[in-house]
Image (tube, rainbow, N blue to C red; front, side):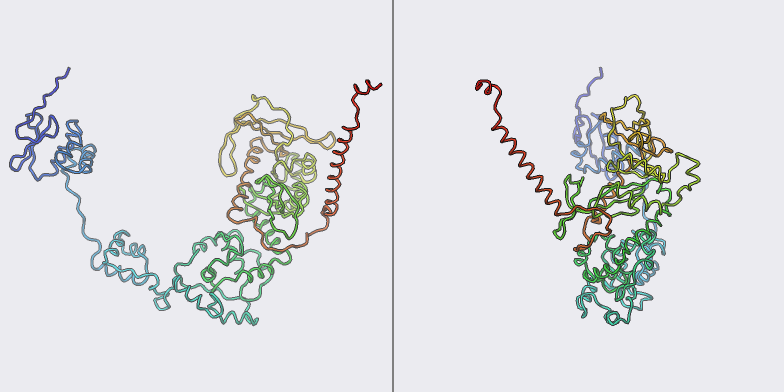
Length: 595
């Protein structure tokens, strides 16, 4: 067994612990292990002190707390010394210390930097031009060696125009305008009122601190998606101060800034919004409503949406092979009319409102929507509005010769939920138009054996790869005369439940059917996003209008009231008859005793 050392300390030494001590003699420090000296260094040589104390700690002879207590040094100093010893060794304490090189900001560089800053160049531009670090320039400005002018002091083009305005100056100018808040271009407004001007000119000013200024960076994306396409083709030319293009841009800015209704615009600064559009201010709520009413004449928005939908489909034909159709109920809480009630799944209640049927692509992006004030279900909307629209607008559809050559080829695939389940509809779509349908099986039979299910990797349209347990069979739907064979695919869930889907896309595989149907939640996510950020449930105006079209059957309100009264009286009569029968009926035992 190893022999323990006795706690022997040299006479006159300062103990660090029971074995290690230190003695100062003249200008030297001597370290002892017991009574044996082990290391000596001059009094002022800090590198040797840090090296040896770190060595004692790393070799287990001392603890960091003992070094701190014996010499009165900081804990961070001891910790850094130990880390340096572990990483760099003894040589790390004696390397020459790195010193700063020659100064970068010489007098000539400072003079050039000050000239550039005074001319309005940004700090980053000055640093790049003079080839110095941005932090070096920042420190010089902070120390007062350089002076960077404030934004409102900088001059515009060639330093000869007026200074760029800030938000405070613009607010004061808008408030002091004689024709109204923000009306700082009175001559053009008077000319527009007299019919001498058809639209104000768009003139952008040099401004700082403009609220929502970042929306200008998003306008190119809206332009690429067709924001300015077909405007003069479908919309009338507005007369007055604001043009059709300016109103459309204002609506785009409202959408980007999440101003969800026209009424919310009255709580924004009209002058600041005008600077985003190159005008003095945006129209008031009443004026904007009048402009929107003029633009909405003759179903112009619907025509514009139809042209854009066709343009989007032609721009991305690979996304139009599979389309999602689903209904979304826009609730109505007013009292000006009594809309029919319909079931709202997100609230699990029957509430009044209108139903919009949306058609989205495989990414969940919308193509168009069909509004149904009187809704007879998804099947009727598909037959009457959606399918004719798709047959006309979807590009790259196979020709009749190509369909005749391949009996399993379809024009396109539509995916919907159980509301559209109908074997007769599947049969009609395939026989008449060669359109394939994929939906959930509304009446699946008994479960399939779990041995039929195989783990299959499915790649969703967004690129996500999921693994599902799938099985496939052929199933017969409908009656003997109008029935048809479909491909039934089932997914085995971890709970043991089997989710069944049916498909008439005979040219696809089971994984394509499952990926198409289970990716349908992208459309549900679209509805949730649009409700939260763009308020698609909100009413555009508080007014009633006649229901378009006369070929939709409706229930007579008087008949509905009479039918309600009839059913109520019939229920009361049945209850009274039951009570009367209980009083007049004689038990069989009592009748026997009477005889």
